[in-house]
Image (cartoon, rainbow over all chains, first blue to last red; front, side, top):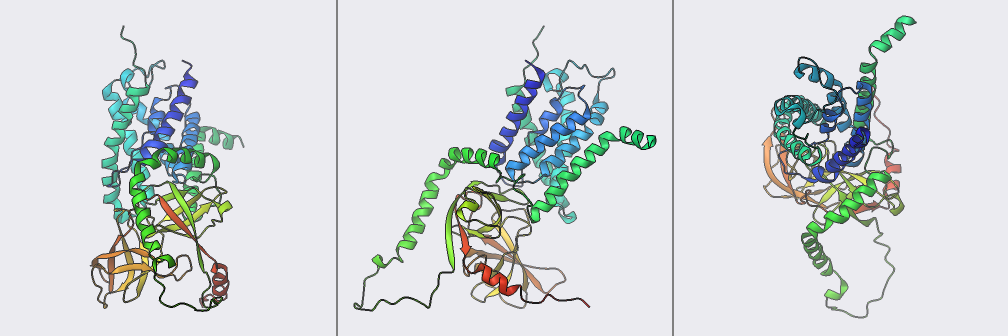
Length: 171
Length: 279
């Protein structure tokens, strides 16, 4: 399948899953599921950072537009997109990334995915909740929200990958 | 000049990031107080359409509870109809009433999108300015107040609910008539708080909290909730009154928008008060 087409489909499915399903799941304790950062980690390794920033911007705005957050999702998505090259470098293999591969769990391994995507999710959620609450004396509440939401968001991302990302064929 | 171009080339990624980030944060913080346009909110045509389709599917999940609620409200209202009274005296002359003028009108609406776990929760309604909805109108349900209209497009509107940071509805505690401002701390969608209540007054637990109707957004006496707890504020002679909302904002579907027919008159009159000048 054409790679551009593949990512457009992922974009639409992730936005739809976020605004139509996950935004409606409210289980209390301030927990919010956010699955859309997955798109950023799945983008090709050799894509320029400027393109990625614009993709993140469009994606964030389309989610903000429907869920009445007015730019909160955009802001946090831009932050992790900007930090993506640095994080990838930190956990990258010694001889660089194979540009034919993709940053999903099946091709890069579970350990790589947990450390890279886990770190991105934590930064994303922390930034999101800090901006949302925006008070210093509620820092504990921000941390509890982040710690409760990150594992659940991660779980939803794993489910999404199992459903929409094809596993490489065994040779 | 060459240095400048070299600078931009070197830092272009960072500059683009800052530019986009600035745009996002700027819209976020301005739209929380006053939305400038319909874009980026759920009243725009595309998102309104998506939410309508979604609501068409999900609205049936709560159908029986909502029918029950409406039925209860119907019973309450039906009791007040002339048909449910027995006429004790006949032969009264009918007069054209000049003592009572209609001040508030109510427009029914359906909530098509709602959240309750965020810090600032907004609801989207399925009616807009074509049905007469404007910025600043009050919204309530059969059990209690819901919020104030934040922005309206032709066919949709967004309500800033009680579950936001700066809602500041003026409410009073019955029967003493003490009034303060309603706040929400962002944690529990079932509880809010009232600030500005002096602690030399005794307040009974479970006394009713209703709207004061001072700004003309809500009529006087709409239900808000009940006093659950009184917490002392450190260093100030004030109570922090914790109230329990009478409406459950997590399952809300049917609401009414309040149209105050005298709002313009009140605003015009109040704008005549000279503002305090600092000297």
